[in-house]
Amino acid sequence: MLEQLLTFFVVFLVVVEPVGVIPIFVALTQGSSEAERRRMARKGVFIAALILLVFALVGGPFLELMGISIDSFRIFGGVLLFLIALEMVFARTSGSRTSGPEEEEGRQRSDISVFPLAFPFIAGPGALATILLSFGPASHDPVLFLGLLACVAVVLVIALLTLYLASPIMRLMGVTGANVLNRLFGVVLGALAVQFVIDGLRGSFPSIGH
Image 1: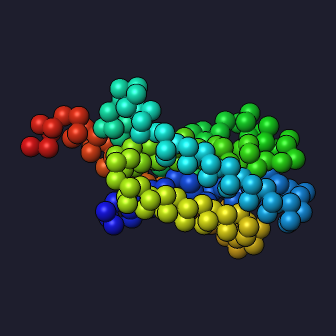
Image 2: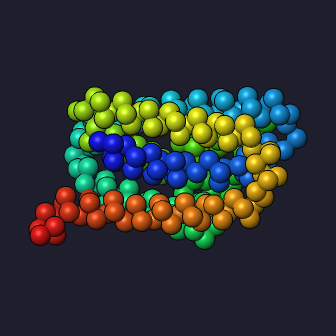
């Protein structure tokens, strides 16, 4: 269980990508006071936490209701996470999070806490897929379920602290430094994504494992 929790924590932290959000957050909140930025950060993380909690609670039953096996979702989730990893490795604007027009709309908003900060930057498709992949099988194991929730809480606290310190971090690292760190995270996420696909294929086709 400890290994499972550690794997989930690493994947979820990399997918939420707190460092990668910093340049966009600073750009979208340009002209806002530090107090206003922190208010938006708190509100955004809180709303993202609610979205993730809903997916954690109803994701597994929803997949069962739709007749979708967890192994099928592992394959899809692995492919999705692999695409996100490629974007991170090549330092491209993440189309898996938000499109150009959506980001432009975010720049025109005075309060970006709900959109695009909470969704899709923090609780984006990759994060939601990771939640479904991990919480689905854990729905019948209360201890594992609570452990996964604790991991989500820790990642969100890290995201909040990162947003609180966005300006000094940006001055220290710069865009280049943030991209280098994201590339390293992208390599790790890519390897984990491939493992998700392999596990999904093994579960769907047991003969592959022999």
